[in-house]
Image (tube, rainbow, N blue to C red; front, side):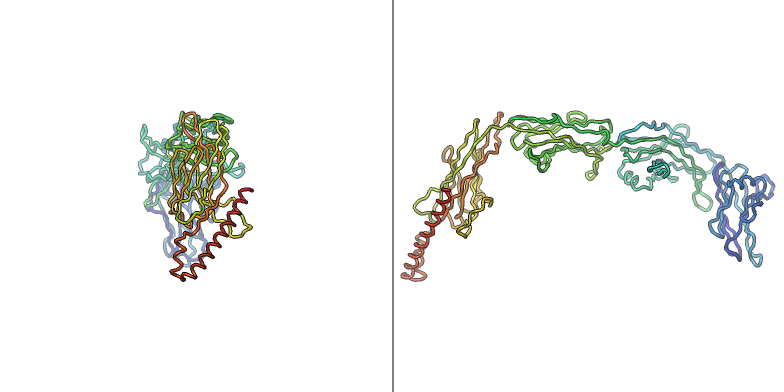
Length: 595
């Protein structure tokens, strides 16, 4: 049988706002598209029926509704063939009453419910929304904090809730393409904070960059405060505050019965990059002597917003001829200083904030290795005093390069190596090598000597030792007299015999100690403060070859194995062969030295 249904009532709606009444018919015969007719029974009309609007008869509306139907203010909108809704765009107080939805019969027999009705109460509009401050329209810098306040109040005998939402309309290119309306954040009818549906606002809310608060104001008003800690360029646009009044209908569904929007003004956010600049002082370059102090300043210039932001300042350096850029030192947003490429600077320098936007790097005593190109890099975390460790910087600006050069004394150094030989150097004996160093310097100087063992000479007679082959470091005698031994098990010592003569001794030399040996000398000079620094002047000696003969006692063991007569023959053959090979090697070595 036919059944017509409407929402349960009574329904409370607000004057001057819209009414939407859905009506559905089921269990009918005939076409799927059914007709609907709406009637109003006013409370003061003693039950008289007033035709409102019909889907099949254009002349159906009575006089109170004819003009409104013709203007489209009152109409029927279909959801489907058997579902339609009555729309009244602007309710009037005299629209209050009982509304009946009637469906003319298309059935073969009269059976069922052909109409249904619901009471609609029209309550006065009491929702008010005000603001405390309108945006001036003047540009603000990226990272600036924004705070906007809306106040709402409502006087109603019904139990209603209010929601408030802050939003922005931003232009997306040409005006013909319209505007992009975005909800920023709000408090819904159940007092829950709801960030905008845009993913960006959800993340910023989670990071604590946007928030909304509800407070009690004067005169029964509720205050809603929007806070944005760090504005971004994409936040530019026209801001508004929207308040809505909600009521729960008898069927349990919440219905928005009115809303109001308050314009809060236009905002233009200027990118930080347009106003921020970084420069290093002094400009150009600085020339110093070793041991002198170096002071460089990094100045952050521009208006305003970065002063309320976290900053990270780094000093970077690369060599005088360019090359890889390395970090010298940094001060992070928490004020912690860390040293980069040279950790020893932690005790020989400082980095600190001198004033707002001014950061200094000091090296108490420079050395040749400090020469190069310096610049500072400033990373700004706009509007954030304590950024998360993984947070990207809003912007990073770098200064121009400053050239730091050192005026060093001219130093000349040369080195030669000598292998004093006894008649024979046998396995198990003590081997002595001497490194003679000559230094020409105007000031006080010291020498640091390294001893290296080169790889074995190639087997081919016409091959030579590769000049770029790396040797194994055996021992070092530092400029301050400290000895470091890196030997692979052999008993080794190094010392200084005289002013320019340095000695390496290998005790109980073994077969693995055979090979080419070389010494290197590096000159250190004294700065005016008494500290020592490497001048960078180095010299390498030529290489000498160490060959060890077998001991006689080793040869006397042979008779126990192959007999006395055979051992004598073999012994003579070995001695002859070894002597021949030694003479050939000695001849080649002297030939290379003469060359």
